[in-house]
Image 1: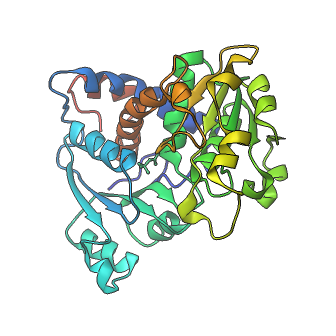
Image 2: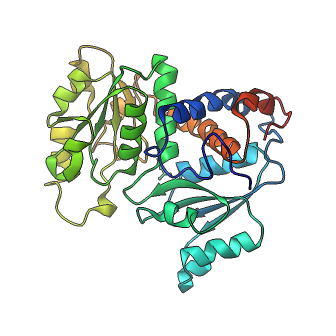
Length: 323
Ligand code: CP
């Protein structure tokens, strides 16, 4: 597929993108939002393109959201997971992708447990590669949908105070958010136990809070992370109950805030651990709007990487092509 000028061939993370490129994706997502509200949720923009969703780790939101985005743009889609494919017989990632390319595909969306897997693949195949989460590195489309949700609510990103709370150490969502927010001019903080902070946190240009009460007092928005128990190889916290007691975002804590604090969570949630149900389902939660925005953001990324011109996204939405 022809390389798209605005973003290049692949979307591997938000670190390599400029603020202008990130804003371009968010702006391109705007006209695509409306397609999902129609009775017939389909435009012909990517008709004839073939997209393979390679998911080597579990996923609900990202996998289904990419599939909806592809189908709503009329791409042909195939889903491949490690358990049902020859990866389970020892075939390498590159051999799998090259075999798919031999069947003439255009794009690969990849989720993988190893940091750097998307970049590794992108350097070895001609198809566009979109990182749907690689190990503890980046999850760029989650970062983008979080940015779009913040921008929808506050009408700006610049100057916003956003605190990312919890298991920052294991979180690719945290890294993509930190890069994206900082490039768009937000003030960024993190809050959590020191054992769940990366060693290099002091070099990431963020404020570090060790008490959740301080973070809540400071922030316009909290992005609350799941404790990634499956990635923890050591005893990072004494117990889940203790974590909730010290770092849990609860209604009582939010009621003491000097302003309404917007609540984001990338999912999946551990209710009663990092976030209480009162908060997750409360009036300041935008957790489900985040999921809705995920489809529009992924449509925008697919459109731009396939060569779609940003200024034609509105006409693509009207069913007049554009890519
Ligand atoms: N936010 C996110 O990546 O969720 P899934 O793991 O369900 O895709």
